[in-house]
Image (cartoon, rainbow, N blue to C red; front, side, top):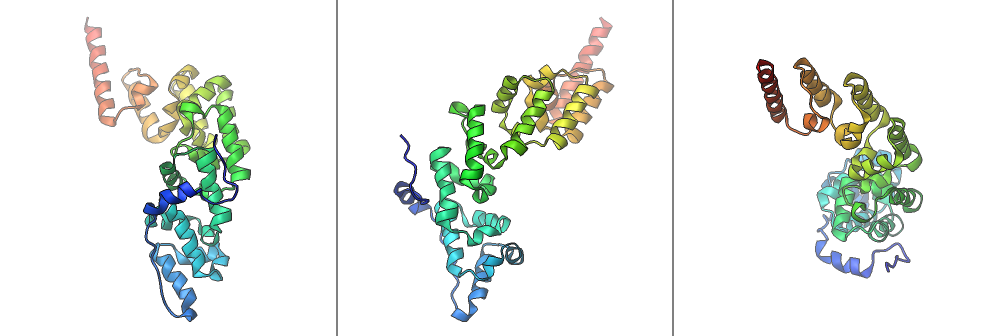
Amino acid sequence: MILHLQIPFPSKHTRNTLKNHVSPLPTVTGDSGLKFRQKLLFLQSLKVNTTKALQLNPNLRAAPLSTLHSITQCLSSMGLGLSAIGRILDMYPQLLTADPYSDIYPIFDFLLHTVQLPFPEIQKSITRCPRILVSDPETQLKPTFDFLTELGFVGTNKLTSQTTLLLVSSVECTLMPKIEYLVGLGIEYEEVRNMVLRSPGLLTFSVENNYRPKAEYFLKEMNGDVEEIKRFPQYFSFSLERKIKPRHRLLMEHGVFMSLSAMLKVSDGEFNVRLLEKRLRMAQERRL
């Protein structure tokens, strides 16, 4: 049985595990009258844009340097290197004045005990999707986690450091509209569910900028069958303008047919070789 932490603080086991993974933090010394300058130097040492940070987080101006040290140490203790920490703090300056015990450790606890990510995967998860650190576990992460669990992200399909980025998505505004669009194409809900479990990236694509134009091109211009999208949902991961359209036009020009997977999964060189082989085979068949 997994025991959840009663306070928003990493477990003793976690803290002991981390001792050898804590990166040394840059320190700045100086007269107490230069506290503001110290903070700027500290942020610059992390390559944080100080102008942007002060604009987006006015509380930073009055916060003591110890607050910055505390949040940096907190992130470092979870296996993040200083370069990654600086990038994250530059992206989300509000973290600079966050309280590790009430704002950050509950997120780590959620990833460890609810999502059940192995400890080394947490650092990868945060690096891949820093937005997790500014998402509330109770109002954002847990409802989405529950939805994804019901959808089938359990067992061999459970969330990993590669797919935890889905947790920052809104169920009502982001995830359900994508599922509903695919169902609207004539794909049964259970089939959509299986497609998503096979290719979780489907839940990261925009309906208007990805699904709709690609589906319309496939069904209208390519005279495609929805059954093929079921077999190869990765179709939506390829660029419409840079790959799908150019390769389809080449096939049409030479009267050659290829399945979606054969057309898209290979490099340009391999595609051209396949196209040439099919043209030669067709020419030989016509001579017979």
